[in-house]
Image 1 (cartoon, rainbow, N blue to C red):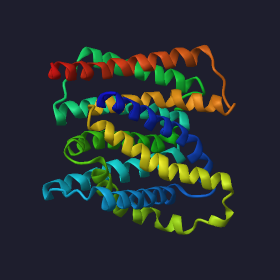
Image 2 (image 1 turned 120 degrees about the vertical axis):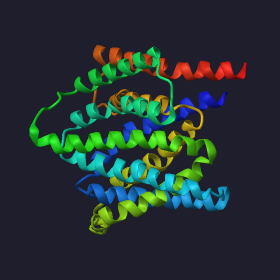
Image 3 (image 1 turned 135 degrees about the vertical axis):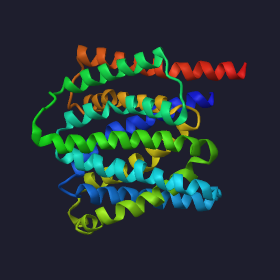
Length: 301
């Protein structure tokens, strides 16, 4: 199996984790842990695991000139990304948040062209458009987009999160090609921990752990270990082989995977709109990712 194929499998698994995360995180917040406290818990768990792996197995040195870039990645990839998304989700609707997040691949393509000089083409543009249409149709099939001005601040926070994560994918790409993914994650989350600590400290201290039923404890463990550690690592590993725009287009698979997870739990049903929307999304993903695959084959020939 080629490295590129493994990268695509990694992206699929990462977005499957993110899709499941929406259900689990909703169970935990805000009744058991407040948003910022939950983020601090996630980042603390992540830096603990990444530190153990880094110091025991990797021990890779980083050039001083890259420390600033890693610190910036910690701002956009951990602090702003996570804090603004959870804060925004708390004061807007899930439908609004999901629709706004579909802007991420478009933002990534624009930033990749400006910062990394990644080439734009018609095929990639069509793929992004199809993914956007398919994801929007699937999300809106479960409800409607709200134009209530009360949600304006929440919508703005979610959009800032989308910009932040897109910028992170573009900025971290050169680091992923230079260092081991564990090395990059160790530094990114170390800086992220410092940024998140002031916001989540008091909320995390207020958590009453004795009130957690077993189900919530398992869901917290999933969010910390799978969503924060494994999914970030899978995405980071994929960035070593694929362009940021290819990584970002997989965000359109999250509504599909979330729907499938809901059907598996008998909380949703399959219908024609879901099937058509999913088909459009995967065609879009293919169109965006197939071009880099061809380019790679040309380089090898």
